[in-house]
Structure formats: C-alpha cells, structure tokens
Length: 297
Length: 275
Ligand SMILES: Nc1ncnc2c1ncn2[C@@H]1O[C@H](COP(=O)(O)OP(=O)(O)OP(=O)(O)O)[C@@H](O)[C@H]1O
Ligand SMILES: [Mg+2]
Image (cartoon, rainbow over all chains, first blue to last red; front, side):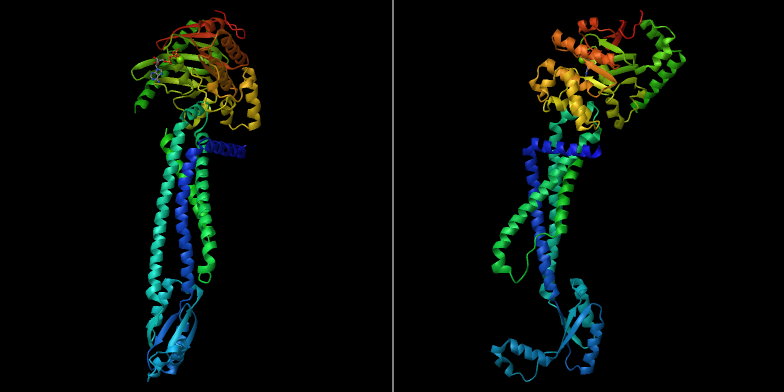
C-alpha cells in the first residue's frame, strides 16, 4: 500500500512535469547551467590537484652542508636526518660528485669549469620523504627541522615557485566553494520560484483536494517529488554536458600535447555524487521554502 | 484572546443549558411534536449537533443562533430565500468556514477543538455536492472522482472499479475521459454527485443539487440522493426548489436572514413520525 502510494506520487509528479514542460524545462536548464559551471570548476580543481600531487611527489629536500665538514660528522648527520619522522631515504652527494654531474649536464660548456681552482659546490644530502609526508605543510616542517641540525648550511625544496602555485591553487579552491554556494542558492531560488508558480496555477485544484479530505502531506508530496526530480535532472544534464565537452577536448588535445605530462581525468566519483546530491538537495530545499510560505495555516 | 472569551461564553451557555433542564430540547420537541421519551433515543442517534451557532462575515450576520440536531439517516432539507444562509450552514459543517460563535459536534467531535491534522479525516465523513460543483477543469471526469479515493490511499484497482460503478449509477459512464468544461450543467452536476458519493460517506451535503437543471435531470439527481438515503446515509439538502421540498419526505428547515423560521416534518417511508 505504502509503496503503491509512492509510485502513485511519482507518476503524478512526472505527469505534472510533462504538463508544465516549458516551466520545468527552464528550471532544469538553469539548474543544469549552474551545475555545469560548478562542476567544470570542480573538474579543473580535481585535475589541478592531481598535477600538484604529482609535482609534490617529486619533491626532495636538498640539505646543503657547511664547508669542511668531517666525514664522521657527515655520518652522524645522516643518521640524525634518517631519524627524523617522515624521512624515507637519504642519499649523500659529495661536492666532487656534484661537480662531475654538473659537468656532465653541461658538457658543451666544460671550458667554463676549467678555470676553477677549487670546487665551489657544497656537499649535499638528498632527502626523500615518505608518502604520508608529501603534503606541503609537513614538507615545510621537515625542512625546517633539517635546517636546524648542525652543519646544515641551508635547505631547498623548490618553495619559491611551488609554494606560490599551491597558494594560488588554494585560492581557486576557495573561489570554487564560494561559487558552488552561490550557484546552489540560485538553484534553490529558481526551484522555489517554479514551485510557487505551480502552486498558484493549481490553487483551485488544491483547495478542492482539501475539501475532499486530502491531508497536507498528500498535497505536498507531489511538489517535493517534482522538485527533487528537477534537481536530479538538472544535475545529470549539467554533468553530461560537461562530460561531452571534456571528451571532445581531451580526445583532440591529449595525443599531441599532454600525453607525457599528465593524465586528465573526469570528475572523481565522490565529487560526481556530491554534485548530484547537491542539486537534489537544492530542489528539495527550494520546495520546502516555497511550501513553507504557502502552507502555514 | 478573542477565541478564549468566546469559549468561555460557550461553556457558560452549555452549563445553563444543562441546568435549565434541556430547554433547548423542549423547544425542539414543541416543533417536532416528539414525545418526551424520545430524548434519549434522539441523543444517541444524533450525528450532527449545532448549538447556538452564529456566523458573521464582517458585520453581516449570515447565521444567527442556529441550534439543530440531525439524526443518523435523516433527510434534512434546508430551505429559504437566496442569501438566507443555506450554503453557509453547510460550509460550517465541513469546516469550509469557521463558526463565529457556538459549537458544532459531528459524531461527537467538537469542530472548534479539532486540530488541523484531523480536519481532512473529518471531511472524509462528508460527501459534498457544492453549489458551484467545484470540479477540477484540467482533470478528467474519472480523475475528478478518483481523487476522493486517492486521498485515502485506496489501490488503483479498487478506485477503477468503484469510480466506474458510481459513474454508471449517475448515468455518466460514457464520459469517463471528458473534461468538465466540455460537459453540460446537468452532466457536471451528475459528476459532482458521483464524486460526493464515491467514498461511501456517512453524510451527504448537497447544496442546490438541482440548481440549474430541468425537471427531468433534477428528478434523476433527487432519485439518486433518495437512494443513498434509503441505504442509510444522512442527507442534508440545501435548496430553494419548491418542487423538491414538496416531493421529498423528511424534515424541512426554513431559514430566513440567517435564523430558523420554522421546522416542518413530513412522514418518510422508512421512519413514520406522526404529527
Ligand atoms: N465569503 C463570504 N464573505 C462575505 N459574505 C458572505 C460570504 N459568504 C456568504 N456571505 C453572505 O452570507 C449570506 C448567506 O450566504 P449563503 O451563501 O449562505 O446564502 P444561500 O442561502 O446559500 O443563498 P443562495 O440560495 O443564493 O445560494 C449572504 O448574505 C452572503 O452575502
Ligand atoms: Mg447557497
């Protein structure tokens, strides 16, 4: 009986959406556009986040040692660094090795090095971090710890540019959240307005339903189902459009440009479900606000 | 605040009523000519009880001090000139309008105490034929009638059977899928009757059920209402159609400017009452 009633309501709601298809089409399109914009931003952020992660994975902390550090002290230092939390591996590169490497890399300009009387490069520890430490804040903390150790002259981990990029990325993230909120509210308002219009257009009908003994719940249920369906349809449409755009772009661009650098992915499942749920909730909330205004007896 | 004051007034009236040894009833009895011994029986069988009911629209008194009891399975005719308050009287019963003063009890339920949640269930006791039909123009005849059963959560199969059967009863089975605006006045009225009776209500309220009908259609509808009355339904008909009043057996209540001018009981086949 209960499930029969739910099916009855859903049938009614779908029939009603069909009867008012223009109104619903406008609403669903508006929601779909909001979802498209928000999810496009989400797509950008999730991919940018992936790229950022891959960059962070490559990060090594280079600890430059002071000049004239004795071998014994170097061994001690190596142990101290290894003991730090989050350090996975460590490699010692002597200044001679470093110079050789430099020369190899710049083999055309070897003449540059011929005049050098003394090796200007310092000894270096290349510190690799454990997977769990590959997070910007933790890297910074670890680098500071290493820098405080004796005989360490300085550390470098690409902070100058990566830090800034991460800052910009976080700003984008924040903008994305604000944008999602704004578009969420827009969706709620458009659904509320649609329900209000439907309510006005059906006032006579609803009044008659009340007179023959319809409960408030019976009267409200189709509106709720309609607005949730609007939300879901809007959400799915928006994401579908985004997927088509994404597919067109990636299938044209990937081979020649981004192949080796990064793998573009579509929205992660969590974000996808979140967006659909969000638009569904927007529909529900719009209906709730609209009906609250009408049905407070 | 006003409401509380009103309540107090009502309670005092009730007390006075109890203390005064049923003065109200004795006036009733004078009118109806019933014997004293019928009181208990009368009370048990009362389905609607109106007690000093007033209805005001702004300064306008639509109903003034109405006290009536309606027995189960009674046929009550409410008559009177236009504007006398016939429709208003029916509206108060199904809470289409709140009373301004006084009390109404439907099967022992006090309408001034009923919670909003219970109102739909109260209304399901009634089958109402509205003076203006109140059919939904955008729904088919079938859907208009089915609605009454849908709100109570009946299964689709049952609804289909029941609606078809009442449509046959009113002779409208051919217009199942028609929309009300495409029907004649008489046909719409018959659909309205079908909707009123489809839920097997305890009480039928018919407001000018023959309003703008020719005498032939009118007698079809009156025949239907009498048929439901014969099967045990309480029927209240508001009308100023003298033909109906003359032909229909039952109690007739004559309203004028909102108050009861006279009551007149004619013998019914089922329940003969000697005057
Ligand atoms: N909603 C309303 N607002 C203000 N006045 C009203 C309202 N409804 C009815 N009235 C007034 O109350 C009085 C009784 O109206 P009612 O409709 O009960 O009369 P009636 O006996 O049914 O008349 P008719 O035979 O024409 O249907 C009338 O004077 C009418 O103008
Ligand atoms: Mg009237």
